Amino acid sequence: MTQAKPSTDPRVADIVKKGEIRVALYVPQYSRDPVTGELRGWTIDLVAALGGRMGVKGVPVEHPTPPQAVESVASGNCDTSILGIEKVRGVAVDYSPGLLEADYTLVVPAGSQVHSVADADRPGVRIAVVRNHASTLTLERMLKHATLVYEDLPNQTFELMRDGKADMMASLHEIVLRYSSKIPGSRVVEGRYGFNTLALAARKGLTERLSYFTEFVEKAKADGTVQRAIDHSGWHGLHVAPKG
Image (cartoon, rainbow, N blue to C red; front, side, top):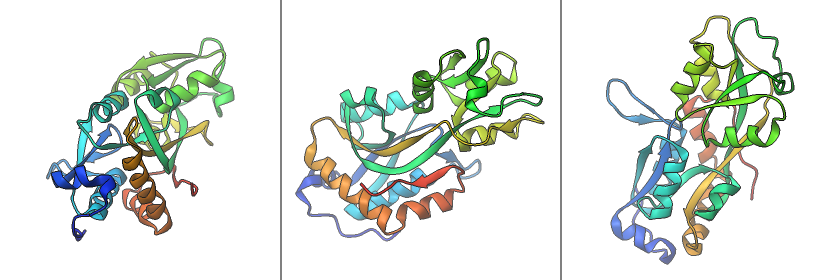
C-alpha cells in the first residue's frame, strides 16, 4: 500500500508525530507465515489501511488474549485495537461503530447428537471455551444447563475436546472450522449462536481520537476496504458490519 502524506488532522496529531500507529491484536485474529514469519490476516490488512490513511506505519502488536489487548490500549502502550464490543470492556475503552461481524458456533466430535446450540444446552454437557473471549461471554449469558470448561488459549481449549474433557468446543466459525479438520468425523454445527461485532477501540475519554477512528471505519466499510480484507483472508463467517 502506498503511504500517504502524514495526516494534519489534529485529532490524531500525537500518533502522527510518532510516525506509527500501534494496534493491539490477539490470537487468533492473525496467523504467522511459517517460512517468513510475516503476520497475515484480515486484521493485518486493516492495520495497514488505517496507517495508510494517517500517512504513518500501521504496526500490529501481538497479544495472547483479548484482555491483554484491552489493557494495552487502556495503558496507552497501543493506540487502538480491533476488539470485540463487550460491555465489560467498556470501563477501560470506548468503541467506534462496528467494522465487521464474526459468527459464533460449535464443533462437535463424530457421533455427537448435537445439531444446534439448543441441543447442547443440557445438564451434563461440557463445552470447551476460551476464557474471557467474546464468544464465551455470549454463551455465559445464554446457557441454562450446560457447563463451560475454560482455558486461556484456543489450542488449549481444543485439547479439552480432543482429550475427552469436554463434549464440544465453542468459538468463532473460522476457528472451530480449523480445529474440526484435526479430528476425523467431527463437524461444525450449522447456524450461529451469536456473533462478535468488532470495532476500533480507544482509551477511555479520548473522544477526538475515537471520532477519527469512527470516520475511518465508516469509510472503510463503504469503499470496500473491509470486504477486501475479509476476502483476502479467506475467513469463514465474517461479514461487513452495517453502517453506523
